[in-house]
Picture 1 (spheres, helix red, strand yellow):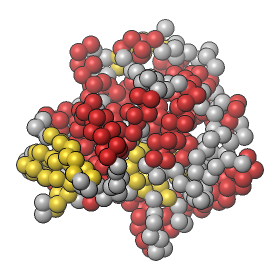
Picture 2: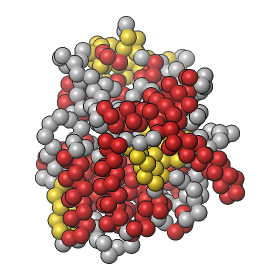
Picture 3: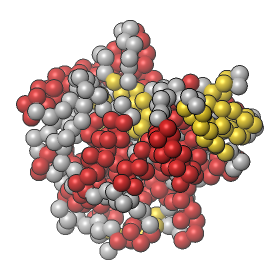
Picture 4: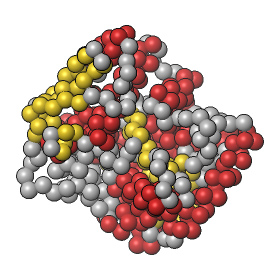
Length: 463
């Protein structure tokens, strides 16, 4: 289901508007304002792209470049006032405003972006622009705590949901129904913040929370600058955090999660699945309780049957012990997840681990270092059945990360246009399995965000 609104013409612009913080950055000292001004100068283009993405939720197109081109005259100016800061916006998307006033959810998200981008830069500057593996988890924790995502005194209650951006209606309805059943049981939701399978669980949970008169339901959106333009935060997100890169975003997901549920999606969803399986297959994590469910309605069951076949063919039969396949019956799955929460609370108590941040989860350095999917790096990936399964899963994750970049990230799309498709080298067995899975993604319309015919950003080279 494509969540975009079809406008009869390109959307209008607001010539000038100004906004002030409502939550984040509301009270600042003069020193903090000075630091903010200095940091904003060097991060302006990054901040501008993120704000444009936020204000373009439900935009007229899923084509990121078309969006950037249409709003090429969009500008932001940070103004210092005696009572704090103000953002002046020029030529902003008009549909982000009601009667000339910005929608409150979007205003919150804009200042969340400013908060996270500036804070992350300051942390990197303190570490000479490098964060080593031993520091990465502390950085992720610091960003989440600074955004008030990590809180004390909160029992295990958070389900992380992954899934596709553009999905058919029946898949959206299923993930919304599961979200509703979770919401009725008081469970909070975290997703990648975008539309489709990221919005559905939040929307369902919001209705469930409302029916139970729960006033403080949490709908956490976790994103990163490279993908936010393609997956603009939906307006149900009431806690938004932007991590510096995809690896730190993924670490934030798994450190926060008590349970993970994956709905059908495309290469980005496959990347997330391979990331969590890489972790669950680490011997150091054998005793970590982190339930993983693959969930779909009956009409989309084949998606997970095919994915299961791919995983077993590449990683071996033992991979099945790390996930549970659940087709239909969202009430049954919601009950099972609710029971999981009691088990997780007991397990965290026994390990003396925090409820809100899974410190004990081991993440190898290879999954903490940012993978840059350049043509050279993609061609150097080793994809062989003879590799240790955890290493192969890690490299497959990187391969799908590159496919996502070539599909939706502006710099990745530009690299493909300039240098041609990525070349992925794999042994004949892995190449066959990858080709079969990716062809199914293409057939099901899961490889492209727009309605255009999909043009592959990669080619497989069997070795």
